[in-house]
Length: 470
Image (cartoon, rainbow, N blue to C red; front, side):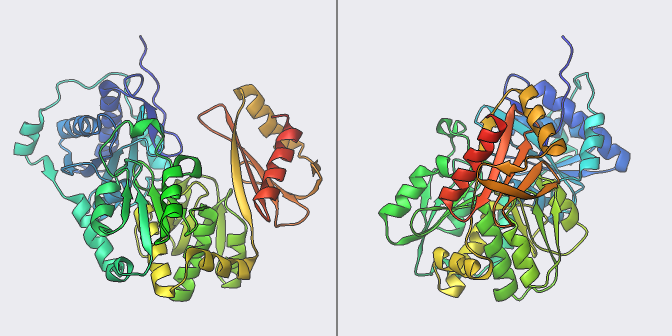
């Protein structure tokens, strides 16, 4: 049987465990990684981490054995760690690359393989493509055993979680957060943020902070439909005013206000920019947002006199800019957010602590802080439908949106159309819009909308889907 062609997607290679994600295929990907590293120089050090999924330790050790065969040193953590801990570990250990065995927020039957650059963020697309091109069809054989690699100094153990915790302690007023007059609920979603957050916020109400690779059958994606228990806990306890959730590898965040209502990434990005600029006094730098993020972020950046840039969707595009320029806030609609003063990496724990610190310093609830945002840019709501359509129909709709865009969507007149990564239709001005973008990996069409409130957003989504016949 011919070997499968391994392709890296928006954020690494992901596949179903025991189907395409096998020990042999991980060996092949690790071989491509080793060959690429050898092209960069004679010696290399690689931080390898894994999250709470099935086989994480096995797959990370398999990677270390392949790298070790090439004389490359692997720096391993004693247990599961988050993706940002790997990224920070690369920087702190002055390593050449990071490898994370994770499928992030995908369902429990998936695992994956992410690459992290020496700068502490996702490897740039050109480097990822170069590794992918070097993945052999043949499975590497005659791999050295772990004990032999340890004896040769080609495997080192580093406590990357503790390194991360020390970094947090120097950058946050943890005493202020821990002793604030509001309670925090934290949902790890059985992911790799659990250990660190129990240590950082010992008095918080902790949910799903246990090792359970099945995630109880729920994809560890921190979106409202997966976090009903967190919402219910906050609604039932008036002392709890902030809910934080992280995905499987803890690089994304979900947030809840004091009423147990979900706060999306669009609002979090605005809060982060306001906190950084008004409270922390960071007045220089850029604001970077992916195409699906609310235009209100551009509006706030303009009020502060800050330059901004809109990128394609995928955090790697933000990270590439952060590696070269000063960025105050960068983020995407799907929960991946980053700020200055940290690595160029999305980090769900870090962002959660920033919001908690903002509340503690300001003495305001999350809703009061959001109202301050609305006072500056106006109130708004955003949502997204993921519509399953067959691939031919998906690309047909995408082509039509680009080449023959709608003039009207339901009762709304299209006043402007923009194409960056998908198509965005502005409706009767700039404050409401509909956006269409294909999934690159699934027969799914992503339909986004912004309106004045949840009811209007639903009206726009329904009108858009009716126009497209989906």
